[in-house]
Amino acid sequence: MKVRLIYDIALSLLLARWRQTLVAAIGVTFSITMFIALLSFMGGLNKLLDSLITNRTPHIRLYHQLQPAKVQPAQLYPGFKNAYNFIASIKPKNRQLDIHNSGAVIAALHRDAHVAGVAPRLQAQVFYNVGVTDITGLLNGIDAAAESRLFSFGDYIIAGNAADLSAVTDGIILGKGVADKMLAHIGDVIQVTAGNGTHLQLKVVGFYQSGLQQVDDVESFVAVGTAQKLLGEPGSYITDIEIKLNDIKEAPALAKVYGRLFNVDAIDIQTANSEFETGGNIRTTISYAVGVTLLIVAGFGIYNILNMMIYEKMDSIAILKATGFSGRDVRNIFILIALSIGVIGGGVGLITGFGLSAIIHHVPFNTNALPTVHVYPVDFNPRFYIIASVFSVLTTYMAGYFPSRKASKIDPVVIIRGK
Image (cartoon, rainbow, N blue to C red; front, side, top):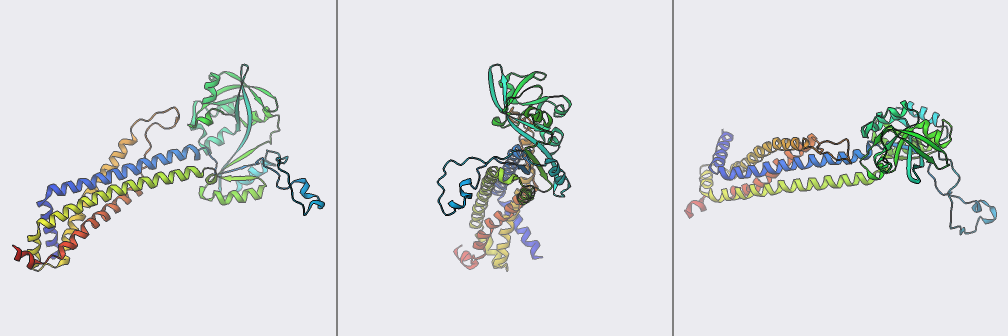
């Protein structure tokens, strides 16, 4: 019975100052709306920026790295065992860049339960010959079907088709920047020169655009066999093995295992792109900070309104306490008022936040640098809505708690005597 009575009194106080109540609810609604829209947009942006790298980066890359010899020949001579080595110009040791017995390595990886797929790659420094001018570039020999299936290679081809690398003999997909420099069109035949002096005529079958200008200005793609022919190497010559795992979180540990097992250098995606993860965390932290600040500001608005309400309703509070209502009952009345504002404003904010996010997600966003993106990125993660709901209730509760304590301590005798 008392609960129902407390509810009726709280409702009466809310309606008695409905304009102030409406303003407070609108403040909460605006805060929740902007909180959700900001986090959704920033989450979508983080996913977009990360995908520019992660979509094309293997979870683990096996390769041979050119590096200095750790032990110089002079140090192996017994007579110099206790001597100090003053060699200053240490040269890299003679080490083949291809992966030894690559076929067996790939077969072993296919049998590994942790591995979702494997793609061989052959990288070589080349020159694109344009008349008397040579443009430095990087040629990638790939399995186009595997690259498209595992690393979304086909999504970044803006003209032509990835399958044409296998269908057309000696075909090449040029990076957009390289194609622009060479004024090349699909169907043109260009000449590429390898570091060993071998020339090869290649037919342009497509253009590739990653969204990273430095990549598109140098990289092009051919079939693995075409790259091996250009370099004069046998069919087993592979410089990189790209691995996609079922669980990307296992990459750091498995990279160490594969490196020791196959006697190769191995790098995981987290290590290779740590700066992008750091940037994403910073952007997310800033978004949360701004969103929480908006909710706190809305909470101060509710706090001020309730303080004014208590000041104006001193007589009513005194009468309530004089007629048998305890300080706890009075406190519950004002907390209920604050929570009502928070729940109603927060609920409307969740709806308008989703609506604003949906509107942003349908705004056209077309740029040549990002051929796979056509609208602004938005992440409709339910976590954002749960966090917004919790913060909405918590902020409004705290905004109502302190004024309600003040109201619960009012002495009715003092108020009535003053009147």
